[in-house]
Length: 193
Image (tube, rainbow, N blue to C red):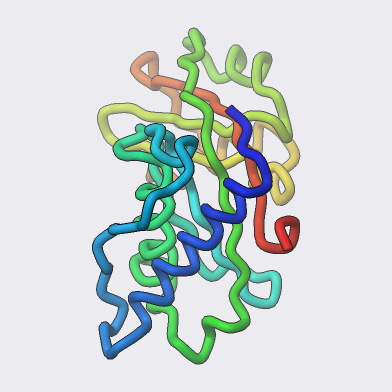
């Protein structure tokens, strides 16, 4: 389900409003409940999203969901707040930084389970620059969005790095590993004006 330009702009505005509301009135980064005015019907559908924040072309935060827990508009609202204030890799965003931050959204398709039992089988069906990938087992779960292909273009390295993100050794594999792929509809303020 692809969104039109008005809905994309509406989602980007929701992401910005979430962060701005947490920065305002001495809230110190506290999440403000989602109570948006009536929104486009396309934004009321349950759909997973990731919100990525960049400052001077450097990652400043990225958080999202994989299992479509709520309507898209609310998911973006919560993930924007989390990317700004709750990404463990960064200090919470400050009001001084906020004007230099660009917001980028990735809307996920429903993940498709891949029937693979070996890493070689996975590498044979993996589509570089298209697939987002989820690896999960009893002892961890991790994902890379398709945008990560821009930094890790070699499929075997992509999978190894994702395993390490999940907390496993790069050489780890088990018949209990479950593999899913998805695609994203990605856009940011630089494209939406």
